[in-house]
Image 1 (cartoon, rainbow, N blue to C red):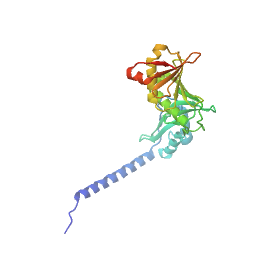
Image 2 (cartoon, rainbow, N blue to C red):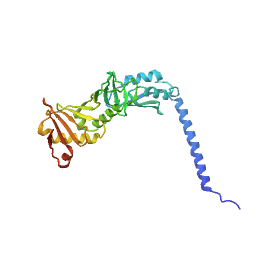
Image 3 (tube, rainbow, N blue to C red):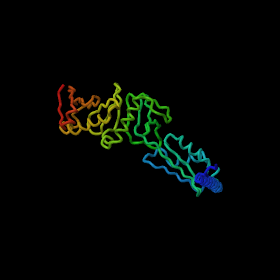
Image 4 (cartoon, rainbow, N blue to C red):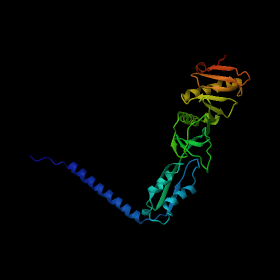
Amino acid sequence: MLKKINWRAILFGFLWLISLSGLITLMSFIEIKKSALKCKDVKVLLPGQFNFIERDEVDRILMENGGAMLGKDLNDINIHKLENALKANPFIEFAKVYADMTGVIHVQIRQREPVLRVVNMANLHFYIDGNGNKIPLSDNYTAKVLVASGLIEEDFSGRVDTLKTKMARDLFRTALFIRSDTLWDNQIEQLFVDLKGDIEMVPRVGGHKIILGSADSLQIKFRNLLVFYKKAIPKVGWDTYKTINLKYANQIVCEKNIIDSTKITIDINKQIADSTITETQN
């Protein structure tokens, strides 16, 4: 008994074969046309608010790794070598190089964006970018970001690297949180690690320091600080307290800015519940 012929499968296979042949022919045509093209122009796209690397530096990297490209056959230009050379720069996070069918070479670059400048115990300076990588300072540009100093053991070899210590990761998380909120980004100007290993924050407004402790429960700690700013500061003024301690759960412990350093404890739970503030003298 003869089997029924699956004409649908045969037709599908035939169409697939035609499509594949057409694709191969098109790719061959493109390669032939590309081989006859010469580089007419090099267009560099270097967006971003940071200027760690400028167009002159990009042109220098391209020249060192590709020579004078204008008028050169596209097939003689090693695109991958140019890309890798750009990616080797510590200030470049992403680089893509490609040539179009008109003979123009396009160079797309994305610079690293720092969120924190660190001064460690050995007085080594470096940035931490938005991906949590350590990067060196730049001779071309100084980023206006938070500065962290004090008891910071995180080392830096001068090359792009990941964070090795918990303290450095806590500082990075804190800087990201502050940067994400306009209020705190405007209010907090410096981080400091004290001898106890606590993160302290230096505000732009007010003569106090804010003891954060670690980067745990950042949302709760900053929410409590906001309640304190809204409810307590209008009553006592910005310069009443020497320290505002956020380390403890659901409370803020404040130290008055007077000779006897009287301590005040404020119960945050009640503040949040009924929008009132009570102070108890220790």
